[in-house]
Image (cartoon, rainbow, N blue to C red; front, side, top):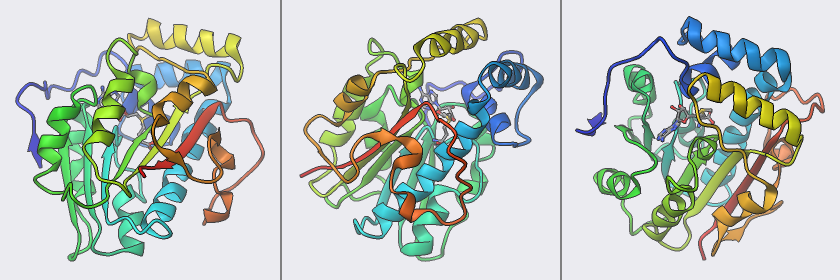
Amino acid sequence: MTETSGSSHRIDTSTPHPARVYDWYLGGKDNYPADEELGRRIATFEPTAKYGAQHNRWFMHRATRHLAGQAGIRQFLDIGTGIPTEPNLHQVAQSITPKARVVYGDNDPIVLAHAAALLRGTPEGVTEYLQVDVREPDRIIELAAKVLDFDQPVAVSLIAVLHFVTDEDGAYETVRRLMDAVPPGSHLALTLLASDFDPERTREAVEMYKAGGVTLVPRTRDEFGRFFAGLELVEPGIVWLPDWRPDLAVDEVRDGSAVPLYAGVARKG
Ligand SMILES: C[S@@+](CC[C@H](N)C(=O)[O-])C[C@H]1O[C@@H](n2cnc3c(N)ncnc32)[C@H](O)[C@@H]1O
């Protein structure tokens, strides 16, 4: 496990944190009263929040099946990993390609505290966890390069994380730098909270997160599409998250509820 010198590892339980609110949405146990309170407020006002978190997780499973399967990717860099929830990305990837090498990263110390669960993979494969901030792409590349071969294709995934990063904090620049560091044949998998699905409700959700001290940056479809600049979107392109390759689902329960998230996967040519 690699830790960056600049990160604080103290777990502040007095205010909500995205990883723990998300854990609460998913029915996990690694959250505190402040996280549950914000989660409940959002879920009362926006019942799709919990369902959206589960759908987001299912997208990660489907995208990883595509990447490790059809796309033949053997190396994965997943930033904004979240508190482990089985199956984790490496378990999906290594079930298809046991030699898969997976580097995870998150900036929340609670994820670091649970990282052991992310490091139990196949004997043939490799998993590593980095305590990093997605806004420091150069540092991520430097640390990840100790485990991944950047001359071979890498699947970079930033799943439900870029809506915690403002444009001013370099959301687009981060993605560009990460994708500049990987060779042709690499892929990018993204999901993001949509601002143009139900603008009024989204604005209220942003205010609720803000009151909890968390910056939330939903984006329009066009703004989401800009993250894929210079890359080739794979079928079906940018879609509402549950509509991305439902054929790759294994044990999902689809009930047709609207999920205000965009999803897309693209290939570097
Ligand atoms: C909604 S969760 C998504 C978890 C996982 N990617 C998934 O889709 O199941 C967002 C995660 O992004 C992490 N995160 C938020 N801002 C971050 C940042 N600046 N750098 C790294 N991770 C960040 C949070 O700690 C949290 O674990």
